[in-house]
Length: 168
Length: 168
Image 1 (cartoon, rainbow over the protein chains, first blue to last red):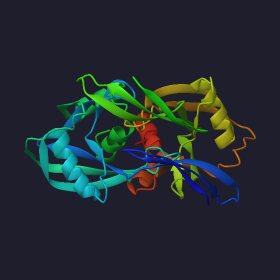
Image 2 (image 1 turned 30 degrees about the horizontal axis):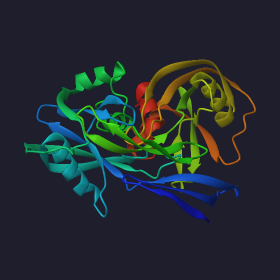
Image 3 (image 1 turned 45 degrees about the vertical axis):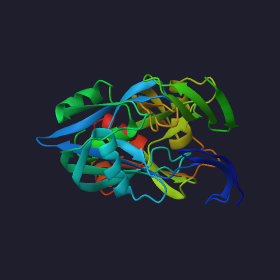
Image 4 (image 1 turned 135 degrees about the vertical axis):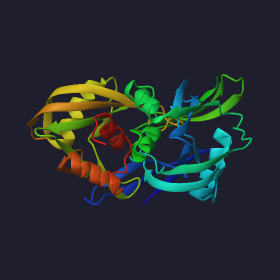
């Protein structure tokens, strides 16, 4: 039914639309149309993972997160993962394996996040975007569990990814 | 700096603004200002939890999710949790304990989800909103683990909550 575009932005598009639900009720939706995203769990040798500490301007806080990024136009999730791991960690990955997918906000955004495990890392000279403030750390499973239990890891996609790979 | 409101909706407000990042770079943000939300893990006796199967019109799919909802104006998270558990499951809770909080999309939304564990459930006559299509199931830890492993639980907040209470 009616679809009215309110805003076309850099990250997403906002529209309102009327839809008929399976129970017949006509609902007014507010929809963030999002191109989708990827998250990468970068495994170094000996059970170690690269974790980022990133400034989130929207919340005005620093957060611990696994590397992730939004799909560019016509970009495949695997290609996006290859690009983002280099940009955000400075490592390339020889192997990227899809572990699963999640919907972070099914109530108002079409965003789907594909989760990859990365192995066979090799140091490159990655460079984050100018508007990204990122430090990287190497952490063990024990450290990740401790950070989660003490409330230091509060990014939903990062918690889901660590759960998928058995680290939480 | 400049904050321009683009849209005021039922669920959230969209604005664009310029902010100075800690590195001095001026960034253009697209911000969903969200009132916040709660999620409740409703524990019945004998290690059983109430899980919902809900129609998500934005994605046009049914999803398995724990009960959750958005804070009303000036509503406290605990009051929202008390209200939502009755509305979505038909049970009231004698005890609600905060387990933690998560940010589902820190890149573009201020939404924070407070996660509660609910115990001491008592059957009431709850009624979901007209635009909510919800069925509820009673599931065991083993069933939740199996559903997660087979990719049937893909809602990020639900995965985070089950991880927080040790069910995943």
